[in-house]
Image 1 (cartoon, rainbow, N blue to C red):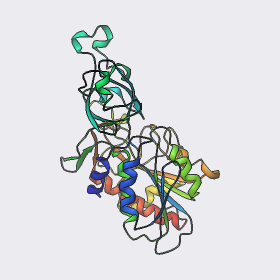
Image 2 (image 1 turned 90 degrees about the horizontal axis):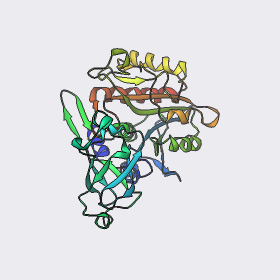
Image 3 (image 1 turned 120 degrees about the vertical axis):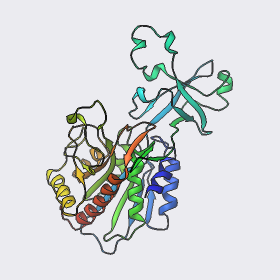
Image 4 (image 1 turned 45 degrees about the horizontal axis):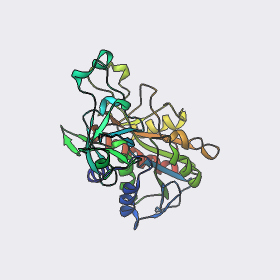
Length: 342
């Protein structure tokens, strides 16, 4: 699965521009299951299992990543931009990016420090104070390569380091896509639906459409979530910890999860020696927020991968946590297909 994740993370695809990610996924599943692409751009796949499921189960993961979009081309050739999804300006300065369909390389820059005055000297510049330098001589030169509305993506290698760490962009949520590809390419006990979703980072828009189409009885959302187990952060604010396994939340900013499903996931994990933890802070949100409210209500659980420095060019995850998430997803899907909570 690590090679699959690497391939997925190296593909560019901000919200609304998931085309290349979708093409890669289709190339992997086209001869292994039935699938369709809905008007939103979601891939809705159905994998026939060895047995017919008693209850309809849908696993979901979003294909899009955070990034930027070009808003203006200055007379001097520099590019103004804004964020697509939640990106902290502090993680953008000095980063290499690609711009537009021609994937022109550029660097995100700001006013030189010796020209800053007052608060500018001690605070990080906001996105509207940044620009992208593509090496253009002037506006006319820049317009040969870039158009207003072009996508902007972080440039980031896929790196393994330490005992079990990986670094890449877009781990959120190419990890979830990798888990679902692994399941589709394996033999499943029960019929299962898989939804590869668009536009999660800008409001869980693809999830609403997919949930309405599939109408599952149970949904398992595969995600990445913030791991703040780093220096200078109090223990109570760590959210979750790398190395402690899959994260199953009781609440985030978009969902108050079903208590029985929450407890059932922990029991199932512990009965099968799978590492599991919960968030210690109510933070973030994911496609569960849209799915659980659809079609009169859907039993929904989220399994998240602890991810340091999320929504940046240098997100970090642990391969042991990846295994825990994958193992738990397989077992939950099997149980839910039998209408079993744990």
